[in-house]
Image 1 (cartoon, one colour):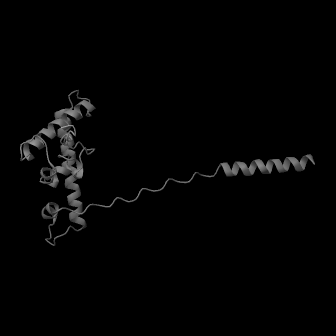
Image 2 (cartoon, one colour):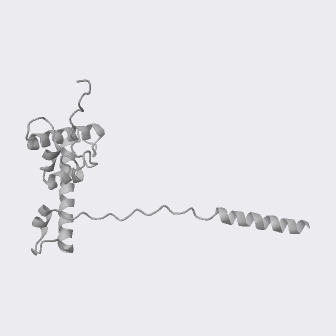
Image 3 (cartoon, rainbow, N blue to C red):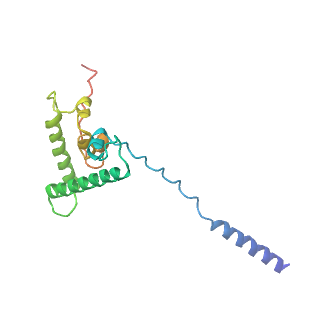
Length: 161
């Protein structure tokens, strides 16, 4: 009887250990990123065979050029804004860079002279400037993570007036 009880207990413990050792379910895979269609500017610049679209070789050349431009921009920003020369931009240095970039973009694209960029003025900014950290940041989104200019929206109307 003791042997049967011990065997049953050992079997129960062995199976519970096996169940506990099962792998946790894997996290769902991130969906593949859909590449953006090239802009008319990009097609004009990189369509070497003149067929009106970018083939694999032309697309690779465009990506390589963008990467080189981005790396050059990062290097220039580091040289200009890394005040403490630690090889990276600290939050204060990033804030200075963004403020300078915003002032530059406003000076260049503020057609009505109100000191800020309206939606229409932002649309007039070439994609090449928007995507490389111009006003609106990467892809034209305000506050892009690559240092896009923080364009301040106009203050809300005061309902008391």
